[in-house]
Image 1 (cartoon, one colour):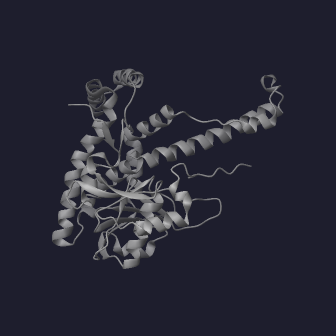
Image 2: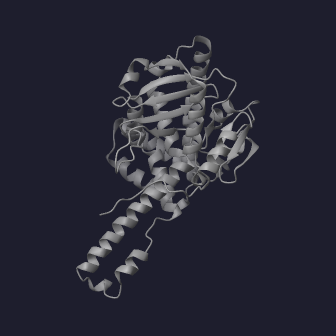
Image 3: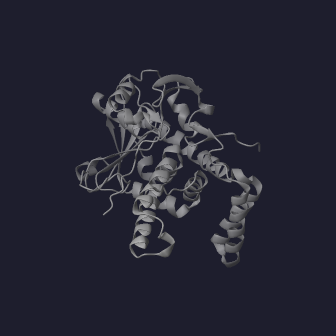
Length: 348
């Protein structure tokens, strides 16, 4: 198998649903506030996005060989398979693993869409909910927006904690900080480098326990399919698993996928969107779990707004009508900044 140059964080089989010809789709770039036509092969991807360096591959192989010594049964088989794949694919191990998962899920995805078109009964919401939840969890964690979220959260945390420890050490009169003032400490910026952030994301994607934890949370939400019967299109983006917090509390974002009042949205096609609602806040929606419900015109606008708000930089559509996205970016210029703030740290 040849090396993969354009490594997709949004799968091609999914993006093809948002094209007119299966090959090209319209892209709105929030940063430049311009739209253009792009090929699926190069959209939702970056060069070497999941690429590892040889040093990391060597370290992982050593760790797996050590784990193998104490493993048995199914665990031993999984470790041996991972070692084989890692030796075969090396620095592209993560990309190849994701491609294999996509190949399995893409067939389930196509069957679900066929089921929706033929029967209007979303049976996959009950029979295949766990498998869908696993894929959605993986998709949520694999994008560039997810990496930037890790970067900001990790850097703000390490910066706040690091400075707090330095202030405490200074207050105690530690000799190493004798010539360092409190102002010097505050001027410091403590952060992880790009390699460390990338590895954090890769570890998440390879950790089945993490994926299963996210999937379990999503699986337990209220699921329903909303159908778009208008001539307008539902949009997707470079971070298609969008969220909105409906429960507002002081000092809480309630933006996590398990938070009270969270709404998680996954556009399946320009016609269908999967909506997942946290049960305690949306208890009145419980009777609609697993059901099929038509969208009102204002709700199409609402779900497209979520894609604009949650995306890293790009929104995708089968057509070039991005007037709503343009208006949103003019009204809130922070949406156009890929380095916009996503987290706030409250320190005492």
